[in-house]
Amino acid sequence: MNPWKMLAITAMVLAGTPVIANENAKPSDKLTLYTTFGPFLSSAWSTGMTDDWQQQLRTAKPDALAFIGSDGEIRGAQFEQASRRYRSSYKPPLMNDMQLAQAIASSF
Image (cartoon, rainbow, N blue to C red; front, side):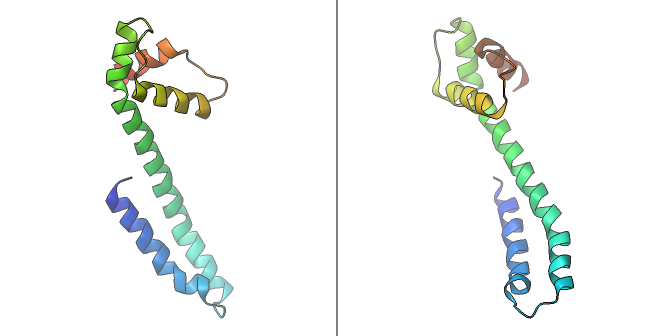
């Protein structure tokens, strides 16, 4: 994840800690905190996860090209990791390994 995103998320969490930890905080204070920072944190988290997945696919491109060139004989570690993540993320698998390798090679 981008270090700036981590810093922003940490700052937002720490800014809200006194309100969350305060037993005497009014419900409206907590509600304001959750409605203000909740969407921001979930958005930052999902963006970070998307960037991570795309980065993994970019690093798998050389292995995907080797897989295509060898007609499925060579399975590099990065491509294998991307394939496993794809299989665990999408049920049922929409592409076989050759189609996934071609998608990675043409997109990244």
